[in-house]
Length: 100
Image (tube, rainbow, N blue to C red):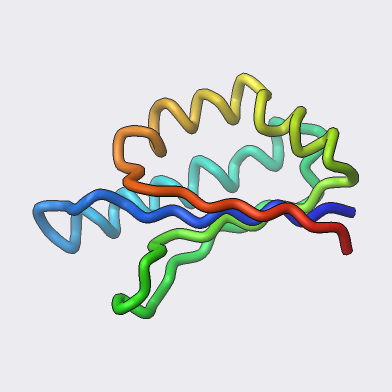
């Protein structure tokens, strides 16, 4: 099994409410992929509660193999969420994949 973890730093928002709304959209749209991408075994989006830290959103997915990570990353539904929800507000991104 491979755990694929991605952390996102978001752009600055006009209000904290706008940021929370966008983070919630991240969560809903990404977590809905579990029903659309067969290779996903688990997907979870969480929010950093420590505002002193760099990263705002963490995505944790579990897949059977690194090849499945590639399939997930290139799946049209995942690409769509990336373009519509993530790209417009992403300031930075970090990723790690590991076997467990």
